[in-house]
Image (cartoon, one colour):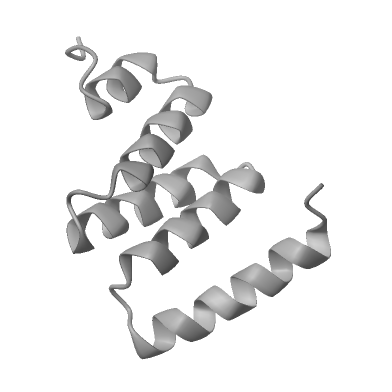
Length: 88
């Protein structure tokens, strides 16, 4: 399983990548996944948005955003994010 130590190591490594390359879509995705693991949905959504801005075809970032929105309680926005329906 994933331990807190592993998450902290991954976060430190990802932070180092983002210092050198602030728009690295994969590093932003990892930061978002870490935020999701820590149940920080708003932060996860922000990282997913940044990853998608850097690379719009990053489907993993789109899934991260949808999952975070869903877990935050916004199922319509989650469905819209993955193209499964319209919010509202």
